[in-house]
Amino acid sequence: MNEFLEYSGYLFLLSGAFFTFTAALGVLRFPDFFTRLHPAGVNDSLGLPLILIGLMLHLAAGLVTLKIVLLILFALITSATACHALAKAALHSGMKPLGKIDPEAEEHASSKSR
Amino acid sequence: MFLFVVCVVLLSSLLVLVRALKGPTVFDRMLATNMFGTMTVVLMALLSIVMDDGMYIDVALVYAFINFITTIAFLKFFTQRSFSCE
Image (cartoon, rainbow over all chains, first blue to last red; front, top):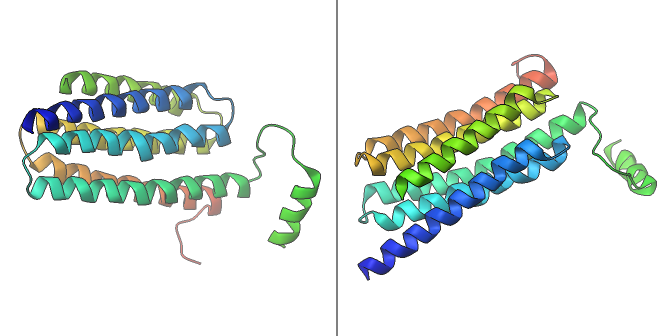
């Protein structure tokens, strides 16, 4: 049982490291601000929780485990809020996403915001 | 294994810092700074295991709080040019 926990913890740690690295690469390489929001969300909602779960499996249950669970929950809530606020602020300041925009959809959005 | 994960997270935060330095708009910089803060939280948690000291988890929690509040406050400042609640 103990060995099982240890090795599954290593698995979680490795996958979390993979997601963290790919998210950083995505933020560096993606062409546009709105596309860069996607790897940022991946880092906050997959990279951090997977690494922290991997750490949790290596620890004896106790107060530190509870704090790590709190950290994961807080990160899941705040990353969604921060990404939403960033996207909304960028749109509000007049940035346009890359690519073609469907004219009907744009008209619908502008009439909705009015 | 823990040190390998620490190295990967450090390398990733370096890549994110490059984006924060050359990001064309202020929102790119805010996004990169937010991500750098998240990676620092992960590093603090890893540090608490490597150094076998539970206190670093508290540091990570407080850092996550401050990171979130900083992002929201800076966004408010850059969109409205003031911190007031009008």
